[in-house]
Length: 391
Ligand code: DNO
Image (cartoon, rainbow, N blue to C red; front, side, top):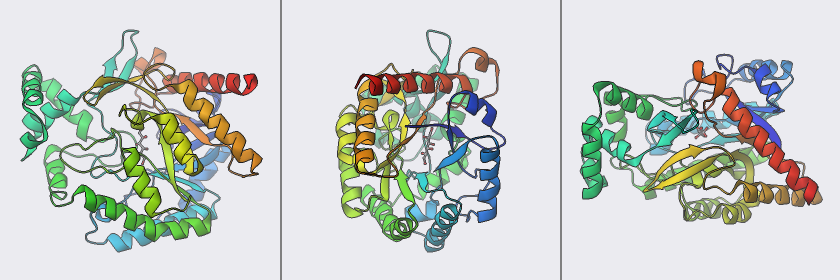
């Protein structure tokens, strides 16, 4: 595995020097200062890349080039944005960057209800609680039609949860859900969020899936020609939120996507924490089935609490069997090496980490503090080495 760390650019409180000291050899990064849909100029890419190289690292994966909402809805200037997307990946390839992670979740990227959830050991974790989300949806956002999304019992629980919240708690919950998590690129006020959701009133799951496939049919030939591997990130969490569709959550979703656009440049970011929230997503089975088109790994653990709720656990704890996942990765790498594939080594980043030790007193990007991720990387590297050496 190519040990990587995500870096949000010069404003990231975690520096490239910190990343080097954590034991990573490559970084995963993006031009976060650009607006969605804009072309990434070669000069801007080169300038960012130079900072990384000067620090002794390599920009291995782009995470993410966001997909403009008009592409997801196929409205307005979607054709223009698709052309821009092609130009961006062409410019990246000119700079020697061939791995692009993106997602196709409408309106929201990854979503949590709590960003500083206290664990028993005093560290803080990211947490998704379905009752808290329903309370926000029903009683704070007051989304039209929200009642149809939940059953009676969920509504009852959400109501009493909402009643227990102070005005400050309400602010914090709302902010956690819609203000935009690191890398999400877009954040909203309640009013803006309502408007955004309305744009999806007439977009069904089938429509969204078709829009994704049409997008891929348009860009994959270019990606293939350039040698750029496009790696879709699964929905996080892997189910619909606020009544809007999500179409990259299950084995069935992935099967359809790869059957319709079979090129291996139509690849997958294998995110254990996102896919693992659904118990029926058998991670080892999924890995084996799509191994050929997995070009990027997000290794993270979660502990399921039922009905979609989960807390982010330490990397080697929780419901994801990290030993078996890493084992499968190493087998795949061995196989690729035998086939003389140049891309035999998979870039991997420890996805998220608890806020702990000194980081508890620092300003951090939720999920992306230095020490928690360093712990995750160290544990996963140790696990990988032990598997390789005992084989
Ligand atoms: C969260 C990340 C996501 C991911 C995007 C990919 O921690 O995994 O924000 O970068 O969904 O486009």
